[in-house]
Amino acid sequence: MSTPSSFGTHHEQVVFCHDEASGLRAIIALYSTALGPGLGGTRFFPYASESDALADVLNLSQGMAYKNALAGLDLGGGKAVIIGDPRTDKSEALLRAYGRFVQTLAGRYFTACDVGTFSTDMDVIARECDYVTGRTVEHGGAGDSSVLTAFGVYQGMRASAQFTWGDTSLAGKRVGIAGVGKVGRHLTAHLVQEDARVVVTDIDPAAVARLVEQYPGLEVAGSTEELIAADLDVYAPCALGGALNETSVESLTARVVAGAANNQLAHDGVGKLVADRGIVYAPDYCVNSGGVIQVADELDPSGFSFDRAKARATGIFDTTLAVLERAASEGITTAEAADRQAEQRIREIGRLAQIRLP
Ligand code: NAD
Image (tube, rainbow, N blue to C red; front, side):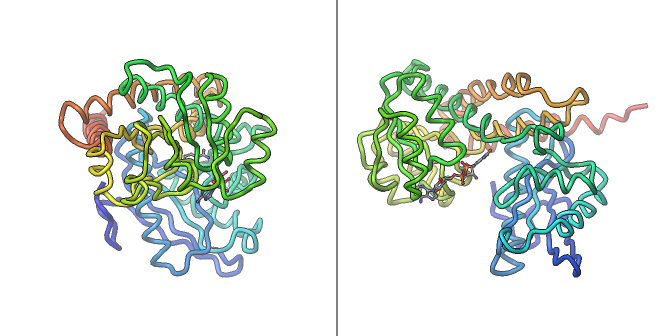
């Protein structure tokens, strides 16, 4: 994916939303609606400047277009940011004002949760707007999307094991998880169940303590640096972006990297470094699409079905394997292979809308 300029790369539409009384300052970006309405979450974050917020939303909306395309969804890429501190600036009026702006896009953009927004916020936004996913289960929503995000990462990890060791099994493999928040916790459960040897780390000692109480056999590393230098088969970054950089790749012992965190490569060049070291990197947006698959299922006319969404997220196994094989056969990095696969689907399926219907 190319890096967007301040005017976006090829974004279709960028909308600035302002409601002075409630303090709402938001930007909604639609990268592409070639495959369907843009779906992506609303990030509520205290950006230092409007230009930081704009850069983030342009980047994130492009990322969603690629993620949704690769996940096989009939959805384009969109994202929104609300500028402010969610702990102090979030109010019913602000969220509802935001909902009215989303409504003005008349279904070109569907929103969902992201950093700083929760299912209960989506319920509030939905009081003004028909284009909301990620609502609470009580409101017909899919609830916490980290459940299928973790399941999808697990499928991507199994596919990477198949590609690397010729066997999907993770039993006996030493898997290091950095960040045991919502996704990391569920991922640990899948791996423990499969008898993998799991090592965890988190900057929040309480998150680690909770998990160790649940699974006394877990090993704990003192820091992410210590974790990646340990003798691992698989490394699963499940905290923040930029987990793979020159330094971390250099000290990494794992043969496979597959985790939930977005934007794991600190910059495009890291994909090549990883490949040169013989490490199989399962691209982040390929393996972490279980969450968007979960919330997208709310758009089915029959209403949300967890089983249907889970069946679809199982497909992350095949998609990951196809991406890894494409990288090998075309002599490109796995990140490039994922981008090509996504771009191909946007082109081939997006084109169909040109066939005029009566
Ligand atoms: P979370 O906030 O619940 O958990 C993140 C955890 O990482 C926290 O426990 C935090 O203390 C820990 N952490 C932060 N910095 C760390 C560091 N430097 N070293 C070790 N641990 C650190 O978030 P989450 O919902 O579990 O998401 C994890 C990642 O997956 C994020 O990058 C998120 O963008 C991505 N993701 C999440 C979903 C989802 O459905 N929740 C979907 C797609 C992608």
